[in-house]
Image (tube, rainbow, N blue to C red; front, side, top):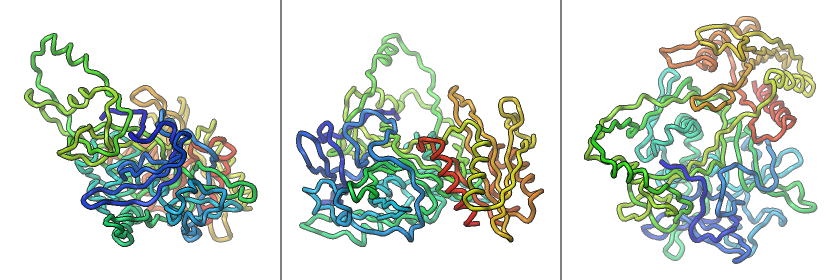
Length: 552
């Protein structure tokens, strides 16, 4: 698959801004479309129906054409920790404060669309149901079609687990390219192995069957689904605030990231794909003219999506890289690609890459399902942007600041000490800059009968195979144990031990071991890089850490 960095939609004029997503409709023997409301200086307010396959690219507030994949926030931005689902109020666009309403000329058509009113401290956030679903699930067109047309994950793949090891076999519907994406492997692990997540995903199809209606021969539906409980999770948002007396009202146009999602209780997950083969071409003689012709092929430069026509049914497809969203989990999931199979490609068989390389520049592509009668090339969307951690100068020092704030704000008695991780079968991972890697063990006396222990490990940057630097990621461990002197040392020993037979490396929490040796355990991811300052990151970390301690 070829990555494409820019995106426009045919029929949407230049500098048109997407304001609201409205109802869905489907004519007989056709696919679902969503009515989108735009504004441009030339046309003013206008609407356009687009295939739901485009939902990953339909972020309200986006101005088309998009010229960059950089995740730039537009408008009001902040990060907020969400309350439990029971505190969310399900309402409609007609209930919005007046200064938050947009596209009033069409308002009667989408006033009944669903949104949530979420009160946090002295602010009120208004979150459209469709934007929440986009952030949680609509990361590619294939995933959208599985949710809308089938209401199950079987179109995406199948999964099973045994002894803390998970296995995922992706469907041939899913491009093999997703095997290379750590973010997509995390997403599919979360979707396949968490029943609450899968039930929420499948509720979209159920809602369509239960609440869609027939009007003038067409099936119509107002988007709705059952969200999973995101209480204690943290979202980074972009939107706009109300005016004058409604200044504390905030409309969320875009969820830019969600942090603190609970990852499945698995140590490692292996991914396979029926088409994940290494093709070995048999050597054949090639004359100079053939070589020259292969290098003169024009580059692929697709910049526009065609919403009106279906693409060819070929498996070959281009990848439209949006990079707008980030999902991060309380524990870094260890997901790996299963060993690939080797196949010999006969000289008479052409690789699918030939079709991709011969596409002419500036050609249209379509995100819809492939068809035997389709004309243009297929495309899919990569809508997951890696959720990077904030780069604190000294993570251990930053962690100690967090403990000081916890002690100050909650009056808990906290003791901590710093030590060196044990040198086990871990090659050089016990070292940081040629010195021993450090840990911090903290003891929180929450009340007279409850002691919570915390382990924080020093992190550094590591060099990837391509030569670029990547910050290490390891969640903070919270647990309760019958002692405060022995269990944490045993956990550290397991942390730094490599179990080759089980595929578990050093610098990873051995969750099976931790579960067996502690009465309660929980994990806390480090602050996300979309939190702009370390002061805000510290505040966020303190609030989420307190939630863990109180809940244990």
